[in-house]
Length: 186
Length: 136
Image (cartoon, rainbow over all chains, first blue to last red; front, top):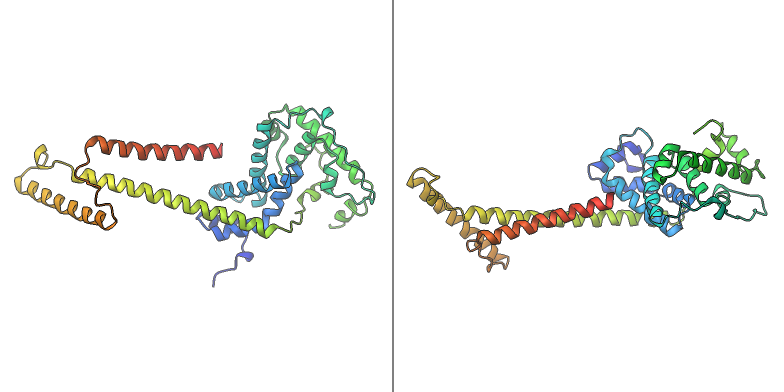
């Protein structure tokens, strides 16, 4: 009897998908679709655009499935494809070159103090949000981000640092309910 | 990532998958696109195969075997000519069955075949360019 798809490992499903298995790839989409869509939204994409790009990323991943060697996670691999597609899209619009000074976000403080990551990201400028999400969400190195965004490496590092500082500040008010809870895992 | 940028709490927050109520719809849309792409590819490959097959068969049937002096021996030349005529008849009757009886393979001249092949090659090249432009 064949093993149910839900019990199979991502690497195994990807190998079957590389051989043309659409059902197996569908299982991978079911598992990681929300993570990829979530990353794109965190990068600053509107929900409909995020979904379109996520779909394109999965289609591209299916066509390139043979390239996935299982060195990292499948989710991380697709996230990087999606991130690059999004960068390409916004590069056409030249949105990321906006100066931070002209693009300061002004997210209102959460009265309840229950700040989650998605809310906290709204406090970042667009370049900061993009760089932080690419670095921590898509797992890209600073140099990769600099190349992809066609920005100087120092600028990328600055965006990431300032973005993280803002995130920490936003996430600080309720450490017991946000950060504190996750730190009890270990 | 430098050491002062590494923040386990933020890493964990980014690693969390957000809940998407329309996740099944998203999965279905991707599967639908995969299915559609697969069908289009099958049609394109099938069409290219048919075109290639028709061109190959017609080329085979229009070869002037005995007149070129390539084949040694009248008997062999006659046999191949006979086989060629038989094959042409079979193909023509096949085309008749598909309503393509007006397509006279034997009457195609070199120029017609050239344009058919050129057209097919251009179509393949265009498909390749489109594919490349999607990937770049």
